[in-house]
Amino acid sequence: MPAKPSTTPTRSAIAGILAAANTVILGKQAQIRLALCCLLAKGHLLIEDLPGVGKTTLAHTLARLLGFHFARVQFTSDMLPADILGVSVFDRESGNFRFLSGPVFSQVLLADEINRATPKTQSALLEAMEEGQVTTEGETRTLPRPFFVIATQNPSSQIGTFPLPESQLDRFLLRIELGYPDRAAERSLLESGGRREQLPSLAARLAPGAFAALQNEAAAVHASPALLDYLQALVETTREGERFVHGLSPRAALSLLAAARAWAFCGGRTMVLPEDVQAVLPAVARHRLRLPSGDQADAEDIAALIRSVPVT
Image 1 (tube, rainbow, N blue to C red):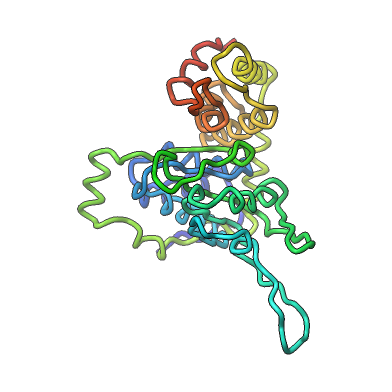
Image 2 (tube, rainbow, N blue to C red):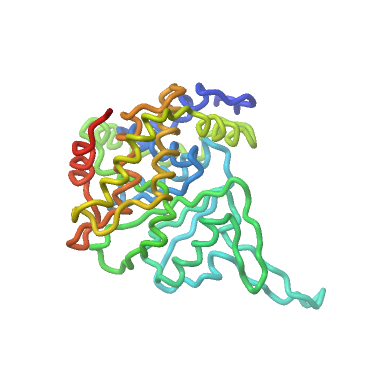
């Protein structure tokens, strides 16, 4: 019998959500926890990896477990902004135009293969991701609350992709990669025939509106002055020297703190530790930092950054 939605959300609800997600996405506990932390921190999530490693399944799994209204858009090169936002059509019976809302009017919008759309279509999501509203045909319309974009992206080296502009990359609080499963996880997939068929049977683990209480608890996790000093030192180091073209912005610093609070909250702690900041830093920073060569920072670049800043 599926677990009943929690009406009084606690940290145990987080553990239940993570455990259920781990039965669908095998061997990716850290990535699942990062994805949930992104939503707890009220941010949007970018998942970049090769086709077929479970990016779409992860997004759908989280939406179902959290009880959110879910919409999926398959991005293509011929897609127009109206395909996402909606369009007005003339109603002959009333003699007026009637707005048909697009898939963006959902709580979780899965922007599948977002970098296969043109920059014009990609930019249609900027206002939605930043302000929780869209302006179309001269009218501003508020989106549902909460509103999250979970976007999947194929590697830019693949044919038919358009690079996301830096202004849009910065709207994503975290960027993660799933990678290939380990041998044991892949063997389990081979023996079971995949896990996507489990999605329809996944029940929501939270009552409507309960996730907002968890977000508030995560935002209330204490960050000491010493922890803020350490976080600032990391951010300032990215702005010094010639290691990166541009350092992390103040918005990125706020994102790093919010993600670290959510990571600590998922770990059952009421205080952020330096280890929490280090755990989320790669997912917060890699898509925001660019090397002089033009490439995005990789895991070793972030590891070197962490080593260069002592924990005081």
